[in-house]
Each structure stands twice: as C-alpha cells, then as structure tokens.
Amino acid sequence: MSTSSIDMTSAPAAATPAADPEYQAWAAARQRRLWRRRILPALGIGGLIFLWWAVIAVFDVKPFIAPSPWAVVETLYAKRAVLLDNLLPTAMEAAGGFLLGNVAAIAVATLFVHNKTMQDIFFPVVLMFNAVPLVAKAPVLVLIMGNGMEPKITIAALVCFFPTLVNMVRGLESVNPQAMELMRVLSASKTEIFFRLRLLNALPYLFSALRIAASMCVIGAVIGEWVGATVGIGAMILQATFNFDSPLLYAAIVMSATLSGLFFLLVTLAERMVIRWQPER
Image (cartoon, rainbow, N blue to C red; front, side, top):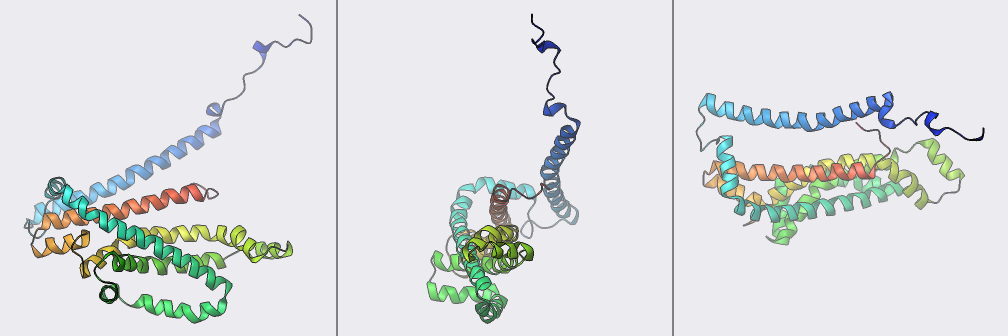
C-alpha cells in the first residue's frame, strides 16, 4: 500500500448532532416546553371540571340550576346529532364574520397608514361605533338584513374588526426609523416598503389580534342568533334556558367554547407557519 493511502478505520468518526452536548440540552429544553404546552392546559381544564363537580357536591346545587359534569357529558353524547346540526350554522357564521371583519380591518388599516387625513377623520368614528354595545347593534342589523345568516356574519365581523384594525395600524406604523430611511435611500417604492418592511413588521401584531378575533367571532355569531334565529348554538341556548334544561344549556355552552378553542388553535398554527423568525417560546 502506498504512503498516500489513508487508513479510513483510523479516521475519527464525524460527530453526530445527537452526541453534541449543546444539541442534547436544546432538545431536552424543547421537549420540556412541548410537555408544558400539553400538560399545563390539561391540568387547568381538569382542575376547572373538578372545581365544578366539588361545588355541585358540597353545596347540593339543584340539577335545574347547574348540572354535574357527568350529566353534561351524557347530554353531549345523547344529543350529539342535534348539537352538531346546530353547531354547523354557528361555525359558518363565525368563520364568515372572521374572514370579512379581518380582511376589512387590514384594508382600512392600510388606508389609514398611507393617508393620515383619512385616519384622523374616520378613526374616531370607528371608535364611537365600536363603543355601541353589541346587543344594541344586533337588532338593528336583523331589522335591516332579515333573519338569515347575513346579520349574524355581519355581527361577527364587527366584533373582529376593531381589535384587528387597532393592532394592524400599530404594527404598520411601528417600523424601525432606520430601516425606513434605508428603504428610502434605496429608492424603494411605497409598495415595496409596504410588503417588504411594514407588513412583515405588522405580522406579530396582526396575529395577536387574530387570536382575539378567533374567539370573539363565535361570541358575535351566538349573540346574533339570540336576536333572531331558529337554528344555531345561540338559538339552542335560548331554547334550553326557557325550558329549564340546564344539561342541554351547558352542553351548548361547551360546544360553543370548543368551537372558539378550535378557531384559536388554527390561528396559532397559522402563526407558527407564517412567522418563522421569532424565537420559540
């Protein structure tokens, strides 16, 4: 064998990531964060259910006032078909309002940032309109649009509109002045500044607002169903209240809360896929 030959068996093996102490520490910390995200919410929900059961048992609360958790579970199973049939229109109204309200808020925020005169004129108007209680807006919209899905979608959109507008305006305006000056020195157009600087800076603010809107849109849809509807979770809540059917009432509330949680989860997953430059919490 020539002296230029290399004995591969004597060469040190390449270090694998799993053998790196720093990688092991990072992986262990990441695993702990994942477990915290799963265990702590489960403990919170379990503790709330236990407290609910304890209050019922200790104070001997009558079933028509507040049913036990087991009675609600039985109602969820026994009337699952009716609950799902009523959940579907509420989900459609909430999703439609979520999309409509947030798209409108992003468009208006973009207009406000590029036209300060429009912002000074109409932002107080939006603030005053948002100050009107939702239960006062709902009957007016039902009178104008009828008892179909349109007023419920509009109410859900109105609930989502203001938080997204405020956060989006703040995100678009809170750009680093040095980065803005650099873009101007490079002769960037308003469109390039918006998409390459302002929008990226506003995304964390936007998703913070979307998480709020994800739960609020369900509330808006339910309130719209209270005013005028024959189907939906809101209508079922009213019917169960009038009939003193507390297990069905609580089951409808659980379905509404589950729908809000699902919307919130979807927005959170979308945020993790879109905003990849933020450190993992």
